[in-house]
Image (cartoon, rainbow, N blue to C red; front, side, top):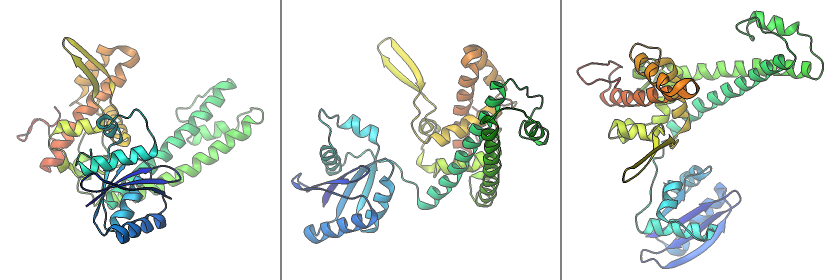
Length: 347
């Protein structure tokens, strides 16, 4: 078998080929487009006539390289970039050296491979993530409108500045140009994004109705169908997590830990894993903190950490609890039921 290390950049893909015995067979670079990748696979097949096991680091563009070469008969693994640096720290780092390191890891069977979702899960993730992207853009535009009012000393006597009464107030607002024009343009963009978000949510609701995890997730305090669908897509297959601790670690909600002797230092969140899953769990935790199941924990944590960061820390603590409950629910195929015979899901 041949072992190929693939180092991807914007304009090229560096390739290093090794034999089973570690012999350096070839080193070259090709454009990273689909046609060039297919020609690459054909060229190596014609010259070497051996199956290929390839490794590429996880990054933007790695999936199309993976999919294209897998279609050509290669076995392609996607490696965790951070763990690769830990396994093979380099004093001199170039694209050719990186490709060689990946090929050697493949030959020694030391690749820190990451899980790659199937095309259907990837498509569902893209839908949920695009909706979140639109919501964030809409929030940024609304914040800009509010800042314009503050900058010109205009009061906001209504609870919803973008409702019927608020729009009437903005229509009668007297501010000079160009702020008047930019405010009107912001309102038009908000309306346009509102329509696109509504269309996206309609599609998500249809797709989410058939997802096996969404019915259970919507029974959790703080999780409605949008967050439920987002969490289900980001988790993927629950069976790949053997314990609730593994799922919680995947979310990136755990603190960094540095222990040596009597020294025990706890830092901020690790933030590994999908940031969209982390966002969805924290968003759910902010609502779940007002439910009877988590109110006491939320308030106790918030008071312990003070008014400045207490609410944020409390939401993270509750989000970790939610991740453990979600593992039990999806693993046992049952709704949220703290204190049930199957275990305390809220703990």
